[in-house]
Amino acid sequence: NKTDIGLIGLAVMGENLALNMENKGWHVSVYNRTVPGVEEGVVERFVNGRAKGKNIEGYTDIKAFVESIAIPRKIMMMVRAGKPVDELMEQLFPLLSPGDILIDGGNSNYEDTNRRVKLAESKGFLFIGSGVSGGEEGALNGASIMPGGSEKAWLEVKPILQSIAAKAPDGTPCCEWVGPAGAGHFVKMIHNGIEYGDMQLIAEAYWVMKNLLDLNNEEMADVFENWNEGKLRSYLIEITSNILRHKDKAGGYLIDKILDTAGQKGTGKWSVINAMELGMPLGLIATAVFERSLSAQKDLRHLASRQFLHSHVMSVCNKVEFVKEIFSALYASKLVSYAQGFAVLQRASDTFDWQLNLASIARMWRGGCIIRSIFLNDIAAAFEAANKPEHLLLAPYFQQEIKTLIPGWKKLVAEAMKEELPVPAFSSALNYFYSLISVELPANLVQAQRDYFGAHTFERKDELRGQFFHENWTGHGGDTKSGTYNV
Ligand code: NDP
Image 1 (cartoon, rainbow, N blue to C red):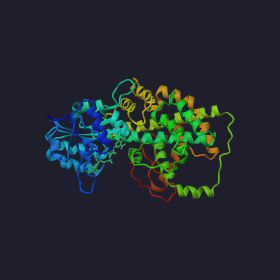
Image 2: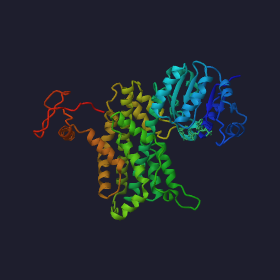
Image 3: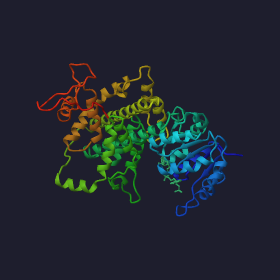
């Protein structure tokens, strides 16, 4: 009696996904390597522990594991991203039958997935690279799952993956086919980048309330709780309120005792690198990544703070009004961040011919994952409209939203700057927005400088687009132009 699916890698994600699958009625084989010096007995511990009495079979021999699974085999890998995935594939290839399906559910780089799909297909197998978001809790109770790669495999794995996915409030599973090659992992990467942005924006809202409004933790928790009843309703706003109220064993607010240096594991950075590769602005997420880096330079900040003394002396008369301004800045900046993120997805889709369905991606993120929010419904609706907007901020609904938010947003950024309080993501978003709505930008001067020192040429307003000119600026330069390629 063969099993329905095999799962490799029994760390936190793998264990919980296996239990989730079993809970949905699937018969599951599990395998974890046994390497001398690396923790042994992982499989036994799981099978005799959390998986005891369940329809889960444990294997320490990879051949026996593969043979236990019904053909076409479905094997999900939940191992550390990078080399381990390649090593595992090499071990699996000789054991598989044509048409078997490998699913990499780790946080792999999408370019690795591009390569692995080709490699597996060249050997007669199918390969799915799937983002899985939601951490331990999502893996056990429902994650947001973003599969891409060999499309032929989708119908085979769909019932299993959709059964273990989170369900959006309307009951739709948060798992749909994303696209070919590394599209699933690319979408997961941008999801994580947006998560960095959301977290930074919420942190700035907190910081302004604390420093300019002098609100205490309970008062700030109330504000977030209140926002969680409206348009900002989301998992991250909800947990922020809980975090602010949380007291440690000693009885004090834990938030005030946590060191202000943030870590990062790289997916935010990857989002920004890839946006740059695609020539797309993703300034808000970049700011969030850089702010984590700057936060980690605690000693330097300490030193600098002694050289440039500053204080926030503002006394706000109307706190209720000011909280509304913070709301405007947070909501508008969030709109900018999602608009930038989805624009990168669109550009990737066009560049790699992935045919991404942005509405479907927005819907997939409504449950299970860290950035789940009601606001994603509005995004899905905008991309589904008969006239698909050129840019999210140009969708009629968001145009209206932004218009009502601008006064509070710009007032808040200006006030924070005047008070020397950093709001880098709020202001990055505002600057992006002002640039976006400017017909004219000073890039004419940049082009002139490039041509002056490097003969990089420029287009002219008084000539047809696509013609490139070089000026002999100094009278003694030559007429030779540099190539006009753009990266
Ligand atoms: P880890 O990323 O810590 O990976 C540990 C697992 O990888 C173990 O089963 C380990 O086996 C296995 N492994 C490591 N090296 C090799 C190798 N060379 N060959 C075979 N197996 C190897 O575990 P997580 O459960 O946290 O994550 C699994 C994947 O899911 C990762 O890609 C991660 O980025 C991704 N992910 C994690 C989330 C989370 O919240 N933790 C959320 C979403 C995705 P051994 O026990 O023998 O060392």
